[in-house]
Structure formats: structure tokens, C-alpha cells
Length: 572
Image 1 (cartoon, one colour):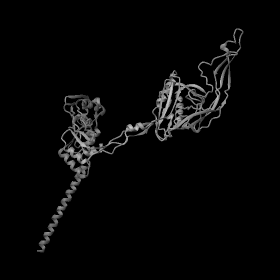
Image 2 (cartoon, one colour; image 1 turned 135 degrees about the vertical axis):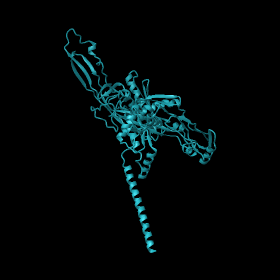
Image 3 (cartoon, rainbow, N blue to C red; image 1 turned 60 degrees about the horizontal axis):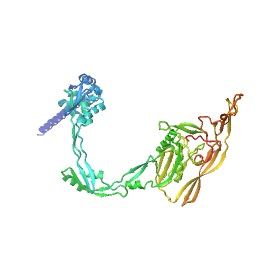
Image 4 (tube, rainbow, N blue to C red; image 1 turned 60 degrees about the vertical axis):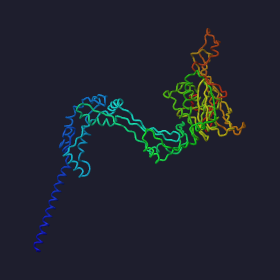
């Protein structure tokens, strides 16, 4: 018996060994087949591009086959149709061409992604069931989109969005209504993938129903509910930006969702609690700029159209400028470059000790008017410079010259509330006012000036042999130089409480230039001719005014320049 048992066990081991060997050989065979399949660089069996079977082809062979089959179709005309409306388009007008790279990449990617088992399963399924990818077209999508939009205008019926109103203590919701629309991007993608496969040259682009979402309590609460919001403002780029008030709205979300679910009509009403804000926009506006802080007016010749235009333009640029507490106003930054492109015109300006034509002449009158208004408004003067020569529109010591890129006029809002500049120029009057909150109702500001010295003008004579001897012509009238201190006088209830030095201004002397005739006088000539004895200034020159009560100043903080060393200060 033991012999038979041993024999039986031996046979069993042989059977098991044979089974294991068979399995190993089968696995080896599967592995070899899988390795060969996965390493295949040709297109897998069963893959088609359109109606072309590219099974087993290389990429180059597939590209040649697709180009040969569909290349001629690029000259076709296609009809886009939706309902009774259509648009014809020649593919050549869209710059259409085969997108071979995308087409072949799509086909070649079949069976080449995922793990080994997913790949083998996909390769097997494609071999048995087949896989078709279209020849993809590349074209001018903007032009195609325009054609689709034209078609959509004929067939679209826009959906109506849900409407929500708060009426007294109810949120009244009107359900949206469905519509139909041609989806532009979806239509473009269909065109690119289907147009080369059309048998009749007609691509049907049907609109799709667009159903607006049903009301949802959670979404309604997020969008419309919250605590009340007071009106307010911010100052951005020297302008006010208002925030409107908003009522507080609250409702019970569970109750609201139940009401929505039970409602069958187009209108749903949900009870809400409405809490009004404490501060409205009307209140905010009424509390801003209640007081006139300072105003100053200067006169100009309205008949000088170019200069008048520049004054008006500068006023427009500073008008309605708002400064928050501590903000610094820069005239140059606000008015910008004085160029023809910016709208400025040519008028007289100061260049050194002379008056010459220049772009933007006249805007110094606006800066000087603003300087006086800012002082009278009790605001802090940060930087101010006087002209080199006197100007006629403000008293000496009370002008403020500017020159873009070099000389600026600046002041700061030294109050605890916003201030606003209101500037105008019409009828020969430049009026600038500053509004804000007057913190001391009993305080007023005055400006006084004190002459601190004169510098005599020099006489310069130039000989001219073309004029008769004894003839004198004035080329430049000349003016004496002068210097002034300007004081800010603070009063309360009419009594002076403080006098402080505001600026020091020095105006240089302008030479008197005379043209002297040196040509000998013959017996026939009459040297006593009044026109010869009392000659008028040369035509085209502008005499510099004699010192009166006008002045100009130096940079702030102020150090008066020595007489005879003026800074060039253009733009009178």
C-alpha cells in the first residue's frame, strides 16, 4: 500500500508541475504579445480618420492618406443652417486648412494612456469595435464666430433671468423663463470637427434650450441678505467715490426653501426682516463741504483769446478736485504738461527777465489765484515760488509761478475733513473757492504785504547808425527791482491773534534799453521832429511794468534770492 501511495503522490506532483509550467508559458506568451502590442509605433488596428482606415500605418503614411482624401474639400462652400435661416461660407474665406497635427495626435493617442491593463483593454476593444475620429479643421475662428452670431440673431430667443425685489417686508421673486440660443463656442467646435464629413455641405446648427435655475434659498440668502450698510465715500485720484446705503435683509432659510418648493406659480413671496441703515447717501453729501473756507478772484483780459483759453482749461483741470485730510495738492501733477497735445495754446510767458510767446501762457494766473484762496482757507502752503518779474493780476508778494517739471505750487489739506476746489474763469474773472468744514467759525484770515526794498534799473544804450543822430527809441521800458514780505494774519472775532511770515518775494530789476541814433543830421533834416524827440517803444515789445503794489516770491520754505540773481520763471 505504501508503494501505491507514493506512486499516487508522485503523479500528483507531476500534474501540478505541468499546470504551473503551462501557466508560466501562457503568461510568457501574453507578456510577449503585450510587449509587442504596447511597443507598436504604428496606428493600432481598427482606427479610422473619417472614412479612412489607418490601421497599421505610420504617422507619415496616415498624414499622406488624410491629406489626399480631404485636402480638396478645403475649397468647398458650406451652408450653416438653423431652422429657416442659413448662411453660406466658402472655407477658403475662413483660411481653412487641415489640422493634421491635432487630428493624428487624437488618433495616435488611442490605446497609449493609462496603465498596462487599461491600454491592452482599449487596444482590444478598438480592434473589435473600431474607433473613428474626424479630420479636424483649423480656421479663422473670429470670422466663423461672426457668421454664427449673424445666424443666432435670427433664431435666438433669450431666456429671462429670475427677478428679485424687496417690497415692504417681502422678497418678491419672479421665476425666470426659458429661452433658446445657439451656443457660439460649441457651434465652432462642431464646425471644425464635422464640416469635412458633410455629405450635402449643410451643417445644421440648432439652438439649445436654456433653462434658468430655479430659486434656491441658500443662494438668495447669500446674494441679497446681510446686515445694513451705511452710505460712505472714498477719495480716489482726487475725486469722491460714493458708496450707497443698503438695507439689512434677513429671512429664515428653511422656511424660504419650503415656500419655494411648495410654490407652483411664477411669483414667490418670502417674508423678510428689513433694517434700514443709519446713514444715507443724501446725509453723506449734505455733510461734505458745508462751509466756504476761502475764495479769491483775479481779473484777466477776455479779449486775449489764447491766454483766456489757457486759464479756462487750467480751471477745468483743478475744478472739483477733492483732498482728504493730510493730502497734498500739486498744481503740476493735476494740470499736467502744458503742451499742444494737452489742449494748451500759445500766449505770453516769462522767460528770465523777458516776456516771450510760449505754450500755456496764463496758467500762472490760476496758480496765483489758487495760492491766495488756499491761504485764505487757512491751509498749509507746502511750496510756492514767485515770478522773476511782477505780474499785474495779484499784489506783489502774492503770486505763485509754475513751470512743468521744475517749479510747482503745492499746498496740503491741514484740516480734519475733506476739502474741495471749485474753479471757474469767465467774463474776465478767475474765481477759485475752497470748501470744507470750518473748524473755528470765529476765525478769519487776511493777507498783508510789506515792501522791504528796491533795486534801481540800469540804463542800457545801443547805438544804431541807421537812425539819425539825436533819435532815441525805447526797446524795453525797464522796471526797478523790489522785494516784499507777505504775512498771514489770523483773526478771531475780528481781533488779530497771530501774524506770521508767509513768504519772501524778490523781483529783479529789468534794464531800460534805449536805441540811440548816430547817423549825421543834414541841413535838410529836422532834428526837432516830435516823432524823433519822443520815440515810442519798438513795435512788438512788451514793456515791463514799473513796481506798484505787485510782487512775487521764492520757494517755500522761503529764502529771498539776492537782487540781480533771478530764477527763470516762465508762464506769467
